[in-house]
Length: 323
Image (cartoon, rainbow, N blue to C red; front, top):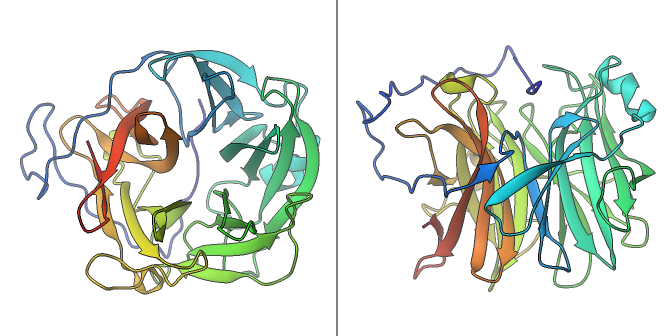
C-alpha cells in the first residue's frame, strides 16, 4: 500500500530511539501496553473506525480510492473494497493524478455514514478535504458531496487529516492539519456537512514542527484533542507518538497535563513506540460497549504498517491512558 505524506524541509528531524526486537536499549519512561490481538487483513494506515447499528465495525484508511475493512468482533478484520471503486476524479487536481487518498474520518450520524478524506501529494500543502455520505458504508455506495476545505501553497496550513466532532450544542466542527502552522478547525453546516463560514481557528501547533492527525472527543467535562507528534511514514524508523490535551470548550484552548497549551507545542503523551512497535499514531477514539478504544497504526520491525487497537481509560485526574 502506498503510504503517505511529507518530507517538509523546515521540520526538525526527531532523533529515533534505537530499539532491539525485544528490549529497548533506552526504554521510554513508561511502558505502554502492546497492541491488542487482531487477525486477518490488518495492514492499514491512518485508520478511522465506526461501530455500525448492527454491532459490526467499519474501518476506513489511506489507500486507493479510500480503503475499507470490516469486522464483526473488533478482532478479525477483512477487506471490504474501497469507497470509490469507480475512482474519484474530483480529487486528481490535488493528487497529481494519483488515486491514493489519505486519512479518512468515518462516522455514523442521522442514519447515514459520513466520510471526510484528504487529497494531496507528499510535502505539499496544495491539498483538499472532501465529504462523501453513504446509507450503508459499503463499497460503491458513497456519494460525493463536495469540497469542504482546501489549502494552497500560499496558505500557512495544510488541509489534510480531517476529523469531525459535534459539540454539546449540536454544532459541527472539522479539525485538520499537518505540519506548517499546525492543527486548525472550521465550523460546518450540520445540514450539509460542508463548511459554514470562512473562519479558520488554530487549536494546536509546534512552531512549524511535526504535528498532525487531530481527533477530538467529549468525555465528562472535557473535550480531548489527540494529535500525532513527530515523523510518520518511515517504516521502522518512524517516530510518531500520540499526544493529548483537553479543554472545556471545543475550540480550545487545549492544555496539557503540565499546563502548557497545545498551541505552544504542549501535549501529554499517551502512546509511543517501544520494542518492536514503531511510530504508533494517526489515532481515532471509538466509543464501544467496553469503553473507549484507541484505533491507530504502527510499524513492525520489517516496516509493515499494522492496525493497533487498545482500550483507553482515564485516570483519577481525568487524563487518558492505554490499558
